Length: 86
Image 1 (cartoon, rainbow, N blue to C red):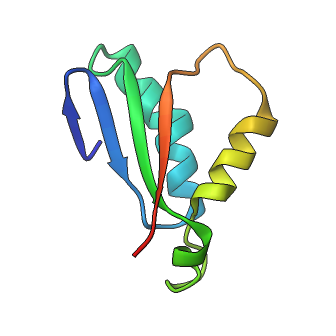
Image 2: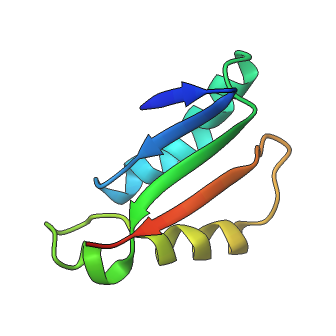
Image 3: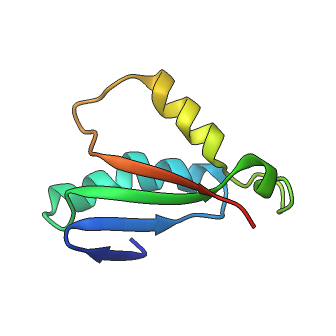
């Protein structure tokens, strides 16, 4: 977790797709189960910004589509996904 304040965990991810999914679907759940956070924020580049970076960088539209189409799980916690650009 990059930082935590008031039980909200924040991750900034400009890396590969697998790390973004791990942050949202695994790491934030672990921190919630440990009593460290109640919700999370994942900051990722939007697609047009990610295309200017090295190959395989995760992006906002990708994680939003995945989360909307995977369905709800009993381990989910509230996560705000923020897409940023230059």
